[in-house]
Length: 558
Ligand code: GLC
Ligand code: CA
Image 1: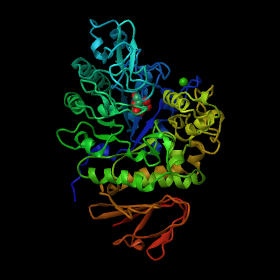
Image 2 (image 1 turned 180 degrees about the vertical axis):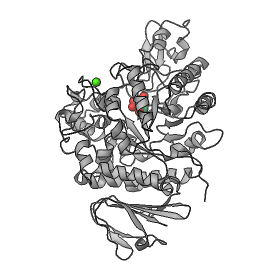
Image 3 (image 1 turned 120 degrees about the vertical axis):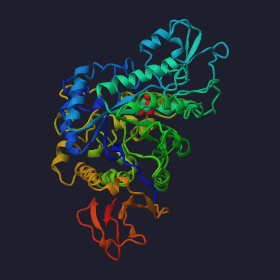
Image 4 (image 1 turned 180 degrees about the horizontal axis):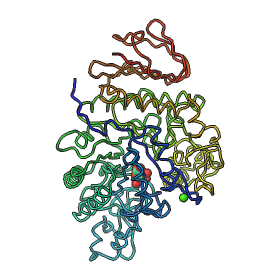
């Protein structure tokens, strides 16, 4: 059996806060740091070891904080640096760590560096960005398209040059080939690490290096050109520089976000040893089981696809690298709507958590996931607020889709489904704010909220607590290996874990209808201890059982 190295971060459970929608302390309708402060005990009680904050920095909000105007300050909408330090200390006092979001593929166009870069070629900040002459009058340097807003090159008349933005226009890409830019990144890292933060989630970090000659991309309607920078030529080299010169000098860990990443390309970044440049990676392959190319193009959910994505990474990384385990985050519609069943809200919510977090890796939980928050169905297109939704609306209009059709797509696929205010209680605005919330509260909050979930022993929330507790109590669930069974089943996801003579068997049904489950060879269920189940009673007949809707069971064997 492969040898797994022990590392503290492998034993943590991480909780992601998207600050704008978490908790508002001052009634202006916007979540803030003192709101977070008031919920630290809630997070501790849940069993969380680490809080990851989506960006807290000053930002004009072209992409709600992922466009940063100052990397070493706190967005006044969220509070002050003093407030941040209070939250950091409060987390540390409770034994929790804090990760900051490091967004250095691009800045905001309102960042000082970018404003300076506009002053012309002689300005020292000009080369902080990718400024290029057009191919000819009115023709950008190449055919790349942005993920968020039309072409990836924006023309500036005064300079008669274009700047690159692979996301929104307000997110100009930094030129990481410039050593001064890399020094700035290191300085940002040191600033927060010296203050006491415990590491970073690194935004689209494998995009930071662009090929020098900017070749044309394969002509697709969105993000054309992405094949040239999704795993850029010098990305690993630059990350290694950050690792050796900064990160290695601190007690910290990182998780790098890597859209479009394949296992093969991921390994050099995450394989343990001298060339490792991130503790873990967020890849997206398990988010492709119900869509084609983009999450906005829906296809029927395929369990086989989902299992293949998870198993590929589980098998390849074991003993070599470490997985991140996540379902929801601020960029995806809610997981119960996608892979579960809203009519079996509790059952499928718990089953999905079991399926994911009993695997090998570090669990990441996104705010609201622990109470089973669901997608929101806004009734008009202009109620949506996100640049990606706008971009897709323009595309939909080009394709002559009706507003009604587009709205349906939003209900299913918009990442804004994950950005509605956190549902704390049955009170007005779900207890998120006493004022007017900046975005719509899901009107299911009277049924789905933290206050009720805490009281209900059968809630999704209490099940999450149990999962976290079980992982802490059983090194097997953290460090054990992974072996899938019944791979070709379209109904069941079954796998085992093994560690130091102990075994676990995880059985998850993705079906409403009963499925006949027989224990795989070598397992005697009557000898196992049922440690987790989303139903009260759990009988076994003939070394198996017929599953109830979305049933999940975990057996431990000594
Ligand atoms: C990442 C973030 C996403 C953001 C994008 C651009 O994917 O998670 O929210 O829009 O990068 O920064
Ligand atoms: Ca506020």
